[in-house]
Amino acid sequence: MKIALDAMGGDFAPEAAVAGAVLAAEQLAGKATIVLIGQEDAVRPFLQQHGAAAASLEFVPASQVIDMGEHPAKAFQQKQDSSIAVGYKMLLAGEVEAFCSAGNTGAMLVGAVFTVKNVPGVMRPAIANFLPKLHGGFGILMDVGANAECKPEMLEQFGELGSLYAQYVLGIAQPKVGLLNIGEEEGKGTPVIHAAHQLLKVNPHIQFVGNIEGRDLFNDKTDVVVCDGFTGNIVLKMAESIYDIMDEKSLHEPFFDMFNYETVGGSPILGINDNAIIGHGRSTPRAISNMLMQGYNMADSGIVDQIKATFKS
Amino acid sequence: MKIALDAMGGDFAPEAAVAGAVLAAEQLAGKATIVLIGQEDAVRPFLQQHGAAAASLEFVPASQVIDMGEHPAKAFQQKQDSSIAVGYKMLLAGEVEAFCSAGNTGAMLVGAVFTVKNVPGVMRPAIANFLPKLHGGFGILMDVGANAECKPEMLEQFGELGSLYAQYVLGIAQPKVGLLNIGEEEGKGTPVIHAAHQLLKVNPHIQFVGNIEGRDLFNDKTDVVVCDGFTGNIVLKMAESIYDIMDEKSLHEPFFDMFNYETVGGSPILGINDNAIIGHGRSTPRAISNMLMQGYNMADSGIVDQIKATFKS
Image (tube, rainbow over all chains, first blue to last red; front, side, top):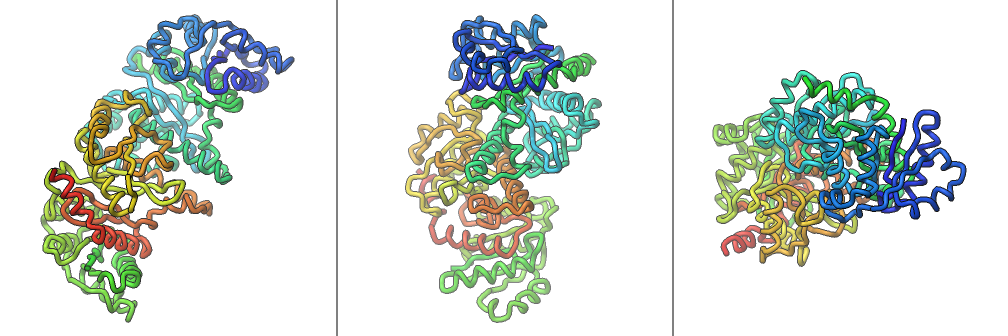
């Protein structure tokens, strides 16, 4: 199996990307090969620094780079030889089984929709992230930013997508799905949330446990938390800032250390016909390596086939 | 000056309410008198327990109680001799200058709108809460739950109301107002957020600093964070749960200890013609006492007159 990495993506690319790829390659030896995509002149020196450790990595040249600040759709369409565009072309062609990038989030989303495309039946793909759980492991929070405003049917689908990921990638037998709201009672929240609640309640593919509140994100009430991309993004960035503040104050504790984005390394785009993962802009080698491991786990689990089968019916 | 307290409000009422009133009465000696409102049979034994320390407290009987689970509007209208209804009647009559309750949040909101009413020009009152700041003190977050869905003009008004509170009650000379969003760029977020951004940008009464993200809640970018009641409620309850988890793990640190709801004790309703504060359901005596101190500070600051003057123009 081959897992592709955008060597040019992230604030510390290509150095951190190459170092992360080397770390992941060691862990995946005999199971998967990492394919680095990027500008040859920029990437080669770092590959040489790692010497024999980088020997198992493959390299595919891409002459262009989409910068962090560029307009996603415009940049993706104009830079067809960018590392992100080349990565998606390889994914579409089946040359790699997952594509990871810590680069321009919007361009990664646009690339997903333009090349590998939505799974038929999925209205809008969403970005998932991970919630540390007090009693160990992670739950799923989605959407965390792809769709600021959502129709009730989209929220219902996020519940299904998250539940499939929890089941097939995280190995949770019967994932509990909750709807993030401002009260536990059915009548709470906005009209969109009321309607989503009714749809989730009767959806036969998931185990819906009802509304949960902001205080329930880390407890055992749910494995999957459904919300629009606006709310999810605020929750995610607030959680990241809590970790950063604790880290700055040298407060370390196993549960709160799971808030460190490096632990999971990236956010999968769910609802597309292939495995794509978006990493944090400031990804370190450890974060990049964990993102690649997640890419391997997604590809190995066959999650996309499960999503296709569910939305076919 | 007199500050009224609903002696029947909160999970540990009336015991915690009486104990909190005694604490506040000591701090406010010579400046304000605390008026307890509640069922005489229930409250008197606790007053007697405190002996001389409770001597300065006034007592006003109210034969009914609105329970935590009751329907707010129905309960408020049917129980006109409830402690919440009696409190608002005294507030309207000018017999007290602030009214505090850790009871039914919805009934407190309904009571505010039905009795003392909105300040003319204010579309919808909102509930404010407090964000601990890394460099000391608190900022304001609003709305945290009165209005799940907001029009752009309501969000603009929350910015004005929060700014006035920050200036006149917290003593921040030129409060910085930010709009909670999923990116700093103007084009980010939902159509409602875009429109609110444009309104806030040209509002002459505030110093608008633009969009802020979930990671900026605790830093110095703003003194006032504007959001709808859905987002604000999730942020508030998530922050409270972070404190609870840290407390359970015996992790204590001055900044994170400010996340303890007891520190500020209550959430003011802003945009009404008087001073009303809602406390946490599980309020302890310390929380009740701090809520009463906040009520005193609000009344003492003349914040309501400032709000009336601003919205008159």
